[in-house]
Image 1 (cartoon, rainbow, N blue to C red):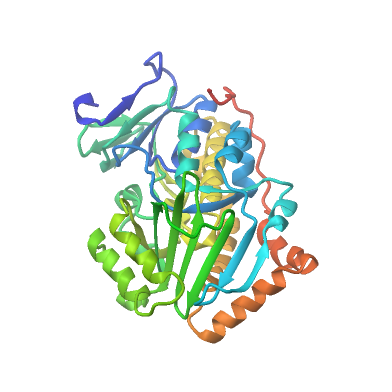
Image 2 (cartoon, helix red, strand yellow):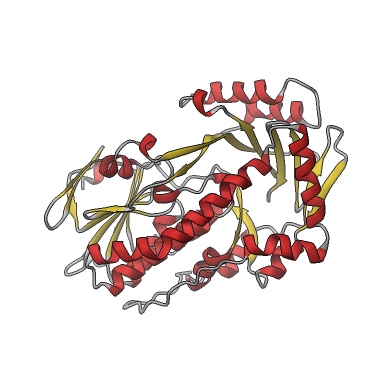
Length: 423
């Protein structure tokens, strides 16, 4: 691949992949670096490609626990994740004057997970995962896959900027709008299920007030606006609002996206809406997308497979997308190890192990999305009553436990080349 076409290129120290199966992974978010780590532990030769010129820094915060946390621990990242993360004390619902309506302490999450629970920026998690492989895995930034040809013994890959190459396998870890999925399986609308919401997020410095370690939420029918205090005097704002599926917006430029937020949230001077919208002008990056799921009959075709949101996005509002991405990456690498690189066998077992688990998460996420921005005043009232119940210790454990504790157990694989994090 022509180095002159690349923004960033790092290669393995010995420059050799002799006798090792080569795997091209598209996407350097969550699933991609995780898969690269475990494929290297399985003695494969992964290459990571990312369309963006560098790791992405915009986004939102996630609650991180369960299988994803366990995998991160096996990768040696627990201490770092706890250090960069947040230990949220309260989820608080406020009215149009900022008065507390409902809420609950989040200590219960730590109790249910044995302390293995943290809130952190999705981009922070992505960076920590990437740091585990950046010195040993070939990484290409600023390029993308534009063509795939599945041959008898390899996949021929064409790139937007680099030279054509061949790999034993290609894995799409490139998110909801996966280019690999489009090339290998068909257009996104064949697999996308929109949930009737749009989500947006941005962050600024110096916003006041700050409620440290408190997630503050204000809602009107069909609209929700939340803020969360980040490190370094930054504040994250999250918008969720209903979007009729039959009139779903097409991709828009940032200026048009900001105008939509002003129209949906700036009609009335309630809570901090106007002040938060004023901060839009200084926002350097804005995340803006439909809330959707991806549902596919198969996650592989020939020598091409999908992981994470590219395969089965549960929706941003589900709260477990990053953990599921890491779980799918870990299981796919493990099954390729068990199968001795026989991809047909490994892909089939990967699908069989995770499909029912993922489907259950997707079904639960559909109902969970409605809790963010109930469409009626009664829905808001009912949501707040449920949150009040969650503030009762005994009932909180019963109500939240089933959603927090994972029923799937991670398989134990025998990694030929076990690794530890490089510091």
